[in-house]
Structures are given as structure tokens and as C-alpha cells.
Image (cartoon, rainbow, N blue to C red; front, side, top):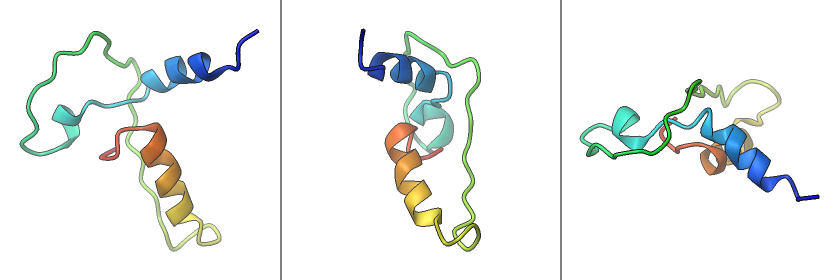
Length: 67
């Protein structure tokens, strides 16, 4: 039985958006895998118990930092 990290990585690939789509002037990258369901995350740092900063750090480690 594995630790589940490969399952998590596979799941996160479904949401990851490549840099060349969300970063201005980024160069095109040939990708072997295109996500079926990419997401963009908006965080209101003033709401929800002031947890926006923590959420931002978490999502930046899981997804493309520009998402």
C-alpha cells in the first residue's frame, strides 16, 4: 500500500494550469499532459477568519503560483 502521494499528484494534475497560459510573456511549453479541469483560485484575505495568507501559501505549493 502506498502513501497516497502519487494519487494526490495525479489528482492535482487535473487542476494545474501551465505558466504560458497565466503568466504574461511566458514562453510556450510543450506538455505531455493537459488538465481536463484547470482552476484559478481567488482568495479574499480579509474574510474567513483572516486565513487568506495561509491558504495562499498552501495553494501556491499545490498549484501553479500564478493560479
